[in-house]
Length: 388
Ligand code: G3P
Ligand code: CA
Image (cartoon, rainbow, N blue to C red; front, side, top):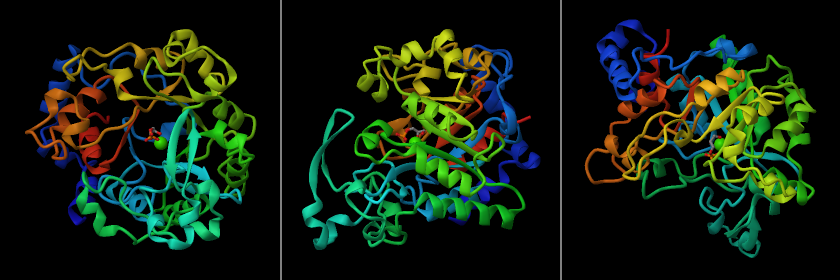
């Protein structure tokens, strides 16, 4: 842990950057992409409003420092911040009594010890969520009081066995606890702590009478994070959720974009035939810019992968989005081979670390404004080579 913290803290130090050989890394990325200069592909008029205070590229601790701690725990958020991450991400789902809690999925079978609680055995059930049938335990069937009797565990223990050391150490945090934590950390550090907060399955939860946006807006107002200059990005894969938030608060908003052929679930439910491919046209991006300040595309929309899994040539998405005035924060960089483009994998073990610096250099060279990363310390070291 100490090594991680040191790495993040050192990332911005000029002497450290020189020692790391930033020119070689950045130049290598430029060569890969066929660009003359490494840091910016196309114009970058994107940083809108208060987001200008963030470094570019910014590093967003994905579910906290989830490469090192069970995701969406105060421990994962704290480590991400201690490493020097610029922004800390949360995913939000509701409890039965309408509290917003931080989990990537409302199915908590894999991220808590709920299976070890006989008193909740009868809550195990099968549901269809966004067209997918799932069997497990779900946050919307638990009151907050009940949920707080559970402990968080590592979601992918086979891949990240070291993280199981922390199983049971933390509870499932509420978003209100995270807002309090961020305010306290900001006071201690003398600078604001940025959050990046996603509404998960908003159409599904609204159908249950558990709409996410209104309680989220109430929390943001109570914590004075409802203004355009708030240090929170809101995000969703469902554009209508961000449009709804735009009617409730002025907090900056980001539309997440999955693969080009996919359809946001709110579009499926409303019969809107558009796919992500339609949303990333210049016209689609201009429409998004009417109610959002950024996009969060999958990395493959920025640099598609070839059939062999290696990187192809960058698309025009970054330049098009910037032209529409939108920030670009793609997801998600992870150190392990299994997630990396083929040319950056090292050895045969899918769980071993590959050449993530090579991958980060290639993505940063496209001019993106930031990246979601499970291992923020690694991303910060690479980002330092691209910051002005
Ligand atoms: O929110 C950015 C990224 O986290 C989107 O993917 O599935 O990890 O929430 P997911
Ligand atoms: Ca997310």
